[in-house]
Image (cartoon, rainbow, N blue to C red; front, side, top):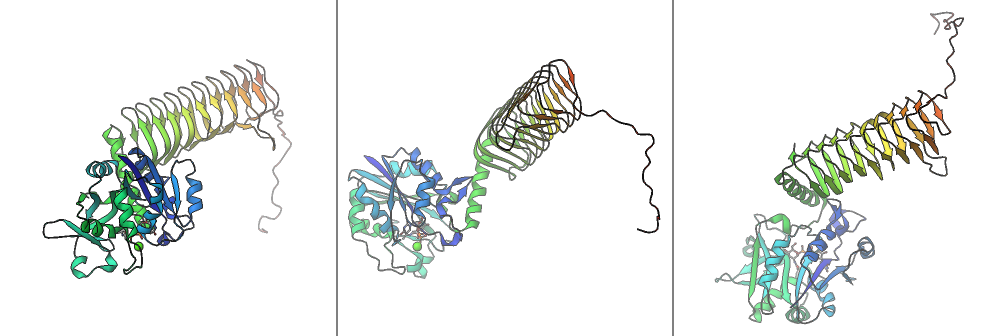
Length: 458
Ligand code: UD1
Ligand code: CA
């Protein structure tokens, strides 16, 4: 039998007070709905349909890379109405699983249980027990514990309101039945909406068995309605991510002070200090040590690399045994070979640095090719931009660049060359030669410091 997944995402998200449609708000840097779609894809369904409404265009544009069928629900007349919009796109011999764009952390394991328990002759619903069930549809069971119907909070009397088993909204049914039930829904209820939940009573009337699966993880069925709930789910997600890291052998100094917004792969005996943020795809080799307050985005970091505090590392490859920071900024397309040292207040952009080179203090290296065993003194700047174009600087092996040197690109410093401190280098310098461009020092013995004529008169 086929499987189709419908993801409801037409709601307004009023309580977010945002110009951004609710389902596009990020959790771990990824839009809420993308979490749901990724999980849906993992079930390998035949089709995925997303029901969109408010802010729909923006949702579609943001998710343009994803293969789903977009179905517009121009007016939000209820969850039953939303599902009904999709049904013309779904064949009869199909199981239909309904998910929600604002319930981002639903787990694959739970959905698999629902899918394997469902068939053409039953209706499956996912429930959860809540100490405070306020706001949710309640699962009403008969004396034999069989589900009879779902009653929404706004339609419930006090007896029903005391029920703690609630509807998560997630359900699975056969397309033929679903089509038939949806066609007979009405909106005679407190909210004047076509409730998807009313299909349960219709199934019972058809003598179709209802099966429930009750999850004991409230976070996987928790919806995001406001930014406080978003933050709750973000923290839950982060704790899960960091636990996964720790269980593979990473030392995390404080699991509450690390954020993983992407995928981190690690070698053995990695240690991570507090307030480190990972984004995108990151690979950390064996024995990598990351100091506090550092952001690392899309990076491949080799064995025995030590990153000291307060670094920003973005789209970079760092070779074995490098030492970075504190306060270093490595920008995209930077590649460091083995045992390179990058110290404080050094910015490197789109440059390659060969092994054992040291750039330890206050430098800007951009669009450069730096050889091995080079020593770049404090305050060295590659002047790579003439206001219109970017130009390349080449510094060959074993060069020694004195402090406070400007290398005006395009320019090449030959192998083994020495540049005297304070030089402005505008043409290529020969190998193994001392190059100086500063004006000679003058000492003027006859000069006296001015003296205040009347020291009391300021
Ligand atoms: C719904 C359930 C309730 C359940 C709760 C779980 C119904 C009638 N009630 O209530 O039993 O306990 O979810 O959170 O289904 N949506 C559309 N189009 C619409 C209406 C809603 O796409 O016309 C989408 C919303 O974007 C949202 C989801 O469906 O993602 C749920 O809608 P919402 O109005 O929040 O339902 P609840 O009243 O919370
Ligand atoms: Ca509602």
